[in-house]
Amino acid sequence: MEHDATVEGVGVGVNEEGGGTPVVLLRAREEIVPIFVSKDQAQSMQLAIAGEPFERPLTHDLLVEMVTEFGGAIDRVRIDDLADGTFYGKIDAEQYTDDRRKDMVFDARPSDAIAIALRVDCPVVVTDDVIDEAGRPPEQFDQGGSGSEDLGL
Image 1 (spheres, rainbow, N blue to C red):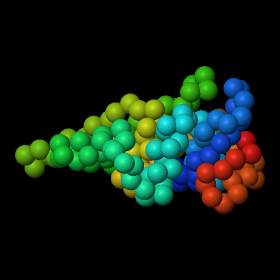
Image 2: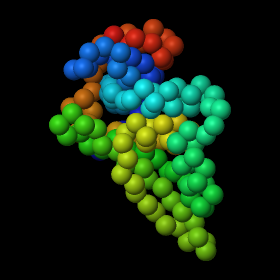
Image 3: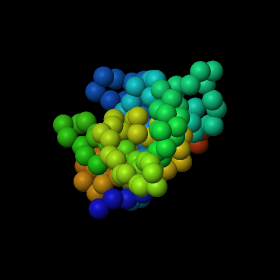
């Protein structure tokens, strides 16, 4: 089963490599799913959340513009697997040509999928299996309200 998720924030957490690791927090099924991302991905997500354009189009902006120009649209993104500590995602899209709809599914890193979803305001869904394995109670996280701080992970 899939559950709608919301991006609760992007900040800094702690993982096996130590502190200062960017993380995006997804809320699904009343749990928080932390996904560690690169600094570039975190910056891209923060800009999208804030609605601030970058001086030049970032890769996610470029992809969204290209999909749109080719008559396509991003319908939703899915975080649908977690294996050996690695999250997996998909982007569900559609394209219209000659009044025919073609559905497409693209493999994606969850960080890319989430950054794109934030730009096109499409749903993010997370599967039960991912939430069961990675979900944490919201009380475990100290967000401090800004969505871009030390998250106390």
